[in-house]
Image 1 (cartoon, rainbow, N blue to C red):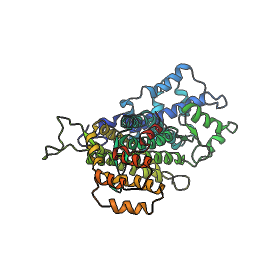
Image 2 (cartoon, one colour; image 1 turned 60 degrees about the vertical axis):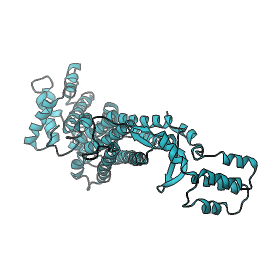
Image 3 (tube, rainbow, N blue to C red; image 1 turned 180 degrees about the vertical axis):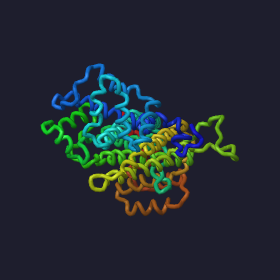
Length: 454
């Protein structure tokens, strides 16, 4: 970590997000570009009709792929040094590959590197691969860990009664587990969509028409060749109709999915913060930690607060990328190139938010006594049930009667039981109401937890 880092992702939080550098750093971008260039060379070598690229031996294919497998910091620096001269990052990759195959049996095909490619043929595939691998290898597993942790909490507290709050005021009771399960179900839906996201690519030249390809080899089925490279060799989805750039619509779709997951996380963070404030959860005390520089007693919900902050930054970046990347003047402008370099920051802040919230979940314990005490002081919440039974029995104005009794009033168990005893109700209904307590008035809450996926 450098104390001079401008971004907290590269400074304060670097240990938490450093694994993302394998997918979203400048180093990673160079590596993925080399990978695309190499696979294009190998693809051409396998097509007899592309006559200027001979077939490769197994050793030569291995030699080319080793440029990716053995890629390290020193080799990345070589590319950057070339870029100082070219002032063009993709051309620097082309020259680097040519330099690496110099004085080998592959030198004769040196001018086939980057054949018929515009820079965006390489870049769009590189970024698609970066996104696919970074999301699938790092983001999704950590998101799943958070969802699983909250699902466990939901299962363990499925039948533990708690006071609900609507508009910040006491409302019909629920259970801790059911309220946690709501978040789990919401996350699971978004997770499934992210897991199935499509990553698209194009490989069709300067403005998307295979112009140079057709002039050079009129009889080669260039669309089929491009589709084979993108789908069969690289593992992306082929986009057959583009300008110079792949239009990034799939990226906008993915970023909106991530934003929805993050916004649910924001909702969860704020609710957990509120539940801690209400005393529903207590935080585990870590002996060596300090909650305040002057108030020794403080144990603050900082993990949920940190998560909330990072959701905000991450979603702001994702929102900008989703709206900006879909728009490009005519056949292309360069604004997408600069914007794309911020993908790692957007994913990084989202990942930080997940990790912080997960840490917060691991540090809380349900305070059952506080939950019980909160409910025992809220007999007025039974007004809903009583007036419904009164309606069933045909009473006049039951809502208004309960409103007069309870609204803004301090209601005790004795007050409520006396009111019920005076009601003209069937014995079974009256007995059921007299046996009802705020803690028992939870409906199907405990059973509803079963709807979350195991």
